[in-house]
Amino acid sequence: GNSVTQMEGPVTLSEEAFLTINCTYTATGYPSLFWYVQYPGEGLQLLLKATKADDKGSNKGFEATYRKETTSFHLEKGSVQVSDSAVYFCALLIQGAQKLVFGQGTRLTINP
Amino acid sequence: SAVISQKPSRDICQRGTSLTIQCQVDSQVTMMFWYRQQPGQSLTLIATANQGSEATYESGFVIDKFPISRPNLTFSTLTVSNMSPEDSSIYLCSAAEGPEQYFGPGTRLTVT
Image (cartoon, rainbow over all chains, first blue to last red):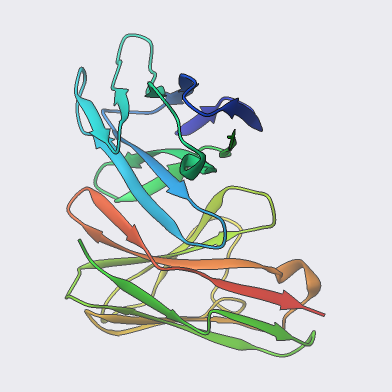
């Protein structure tokens, strides 16, 4: 079946620290991969995406590379800010059906 | 990207009653979806709202409990029927543009 497994949280870092949130997936076929972010009290926002192997998605200083050989899509940022505090969801898109399958989410807190 | 609004943003309802949530997209989209996010949990797809035909429900969700309408390409409603406290969740609608899905801000439902 199709599933997404994320690094368990919560994750707490200091401002300017390096961030990695791990995400691995299981899928039939070749899914597209996404990171969504949910700021406190808000809905989900698309952060970045990658649609094929070796693609790198990037936005707002965040990056993730679609690694087919390790079935991974880890989220990274070189220097986090307090404003990055949010819940981050990794997701895959089941092609054809256009269905998103989400990981369990990782709560990130950045302390000044 | 599509901009999606939902009404109401939150509600507190008594058990046994029903609530209809509205979702409006600022552009015509082929596919719309409804998700549930239970407290502290990830998102689970309830159904795909199909324009001009019945919604397609995921395993564990049924039309009698979650009737959905999709009268045109910019609007959909989800009704949560005969509510119980277990229905307390955030309900989100989304719209697909190509491989990307955009989400509304969610409706926070509390059932007492």
